[in-house]
Length: 209
View 1 (cartoon, rainbow, N blue to C red):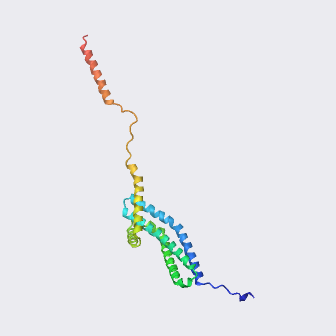
View 2 (view 1 turned 90 degrees about the vertical axis):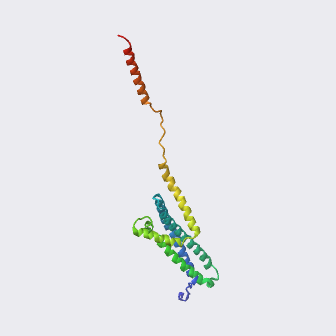
View 3 (view 1 turned 45 degrees about the horizontal axis):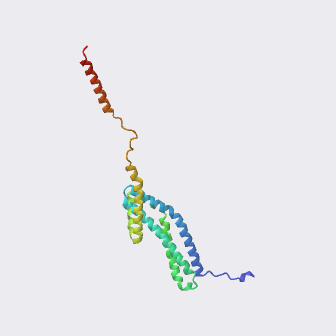
């Protein structure tokens, strides 16, 4: 009897809505996971500044800004797609939505790759392989950061430099503490005692026996 019941058909719009939900869930997951990476990159930038390596500190901060931008961009794109798939004219924009979902998946793969802890630590290493990796990252980021993002990175660098200076300068500029008691004039007292003794000797020789 129940065999004649029709199974609801899953439409392209249903699939798009499901894909969007999965992608947005991943973005939120990556936001949480990437926070530790972003914090570590800031710490690495600080260590480079303390060692006087401003150029290498910039690489770490640029990569950090790039990763932050990936998350914000992806979340914004998915929010726009969410509004599109909810429209009644979905069939008219289906191709655009599917293309947007495909782009979203590609960016999510890129974000996942950026969360590799080993690649983050390479920003701090001194080996030839690590330095080559740092150079490649810097070249890649030079073409992927906007002028506004680069300005933000430079501002973050100045702030971090100020923090490093504040932590190191006090130890260099500590003045010796002022004496709490008056200095003891030992040499003048010794000279005075010697003069008194000499005067006593002269007085004894001047008095006849």
